[in-house]
Amino acid sequence: MRIVLGVSAGIAAYKAVHLLRLMREAGHQVDVIPTPASEKFVGRATWEAISGRPVTTSVFSGVDEVRHVRLGQEADLVVVAPATADLLARARAGMADDLLTTTLLASEAPTLLVPAMHTEMWNSAATTENVEVLRTRGIEVMEPAVGRLTGKDTGPGRLPEPEEIYARVTELLHEIDGAAGHGTPEASASAPDQALDQGPAAAPTPGRLRGRTVVITAGGTREPLDPVRYLGNRSSGKQGMALAETAAAAGAKVHLIAGTMDVRPPAQLPNITVEHIETAAQLQAAVQRAAPAADMLIMAAAVADFRPAAYAAQKIKKTEDGENPVITLERTPDILAETVQHRRSAGTGPAVIVGFAAETGSAEADPLELARAKLLRKGCDLLVLNQVGETLVFGRDETEIHILTPPRLTVEGSAVVTLRGTKHEAAEAIIAAAAAYVV
Image (cartoon, rainbow, N blue to C red; front, top):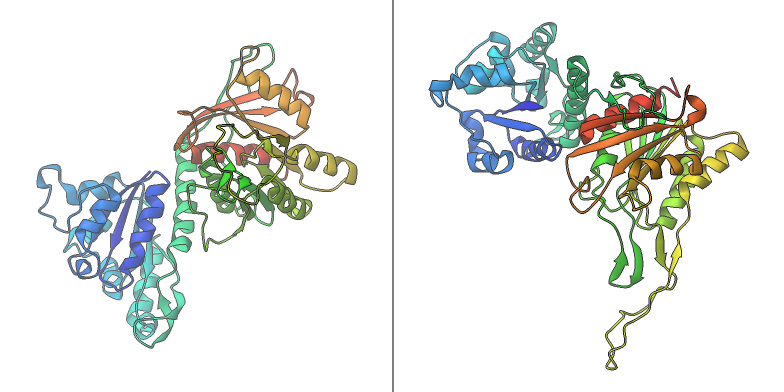
């Protein structure tokens, strides 16, 4: 998605650097438009380095491409953080005296203004009226946070934390993406004798999961061998994070159980709590605690199938005789299968359990055949297949998934829906498929 990030001249501009990084890590193209005065707080070089895009404050830059109009026309979303009292006043008046205000005036995209100013300025009659007018025009103005301001002042007017702003940005992007129909999966015909054309799965609408609890596991596990070594895998955690953000945007209360991840789990993101684990045993315990009260369980974590049978208390060293150490492995617990079995025997638990299969295929079977066998063996409600490898899926923003449904729930054979796109688009398809079980 294309985002314009406006930055006006407040000391909180430094927080917008982290907001920009969150947007970029999610794969969005971001054009930063600082006001001239804001460059006294954060310089142009910082914005260009993190956004990877040219930055200017002047309407006379890029005149040949009518940049002061084009940026607003091509944006999917416009965000201004911080939005000072001066910026709010100029936006309300429809002024166009720099690149940011001309972009605001030219854009028909959804706009989010995030105020930051001293309490007296926020509570003033002028700012109150400006905010009311902007909201009546369909522009969203977030409420500022309450807390420490510049100097010794404390009160409303503090810029919300970047994670909180990004959570709202994510919700708006999901709404925009859903309205535009992006990322709709296509039914797979890879196995005509068993596949069922289900058609596109709709993205979850905002509020569809309100009041529901969703537990999501993400990232990889590490199984210690000695104090400095472990067995691990290539999982980045990106798909699990996308699932958590999508479920939260649909109104769910999300409990994210995070293993080793290349992406940083949110420190403060509305509707999402994070529990950190490292080993398969720790993941097993976390799922056992969280799953009984969940409406939906999505097992997206890449759990190690094996762990060292014995842990060496000291670092394993090379020996003078040149002998190679022998490492004996043992199986880790089958968390997905045991959770399904517990639901079956107890008669309570998540209404839908979603498993994941990371398959490379073999000489005897292709990845889809292996995934079908796993779906029947585990007994979960849905299974998401990723064909993986050193250059496939792990750490990438793009993915290809197959969502499998057990044969008993379909007319003929197991249904397979395939989607190729970003991991956020994949997350929307997975959440939409799972939401059908709980709403």
